[in-house]
View 1 (cartoon, helix red, strand yellow):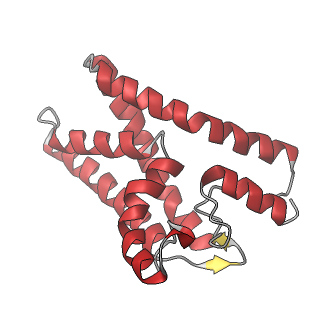
View 2 (tube, rainbow, N blue to C red):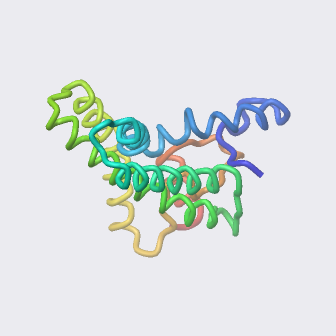
Length: 176
């Protein structure tokens, strides 16, 4: 069963179709703004770069495949125990790590190449994700033992909540 992205906004038949691209085009950019788009672009530019030797291109290709497989598993295989998408949580960690490194490498390369537009877009993506990250940190510090998690972990189709705020609301409802 694919990850439910758009909730009750569409009929069940249409949702099964639009949830598939919605995961890649809506959900991941919203949930992982600082690493998803910059990381994917950085991996793509590293694969296409002429200044890398063959071994490095193969390594970048292997990391790109690892990130794609990791995100595809969290996209297509939703396994829940209670309200926790445990399989999605474990699967997305590898992809998030690869994309974090790729985004950092991309940012460093763009700054060194004086590609200010790409660097500014990456910094803007980091700033977009900063409030949600701070909210998660504060919730985690203030509520020891509370189930605090990004929306990828919390399956909540009834309320139509999306993103970190939906996860925080779900944590409140779980007694956290």
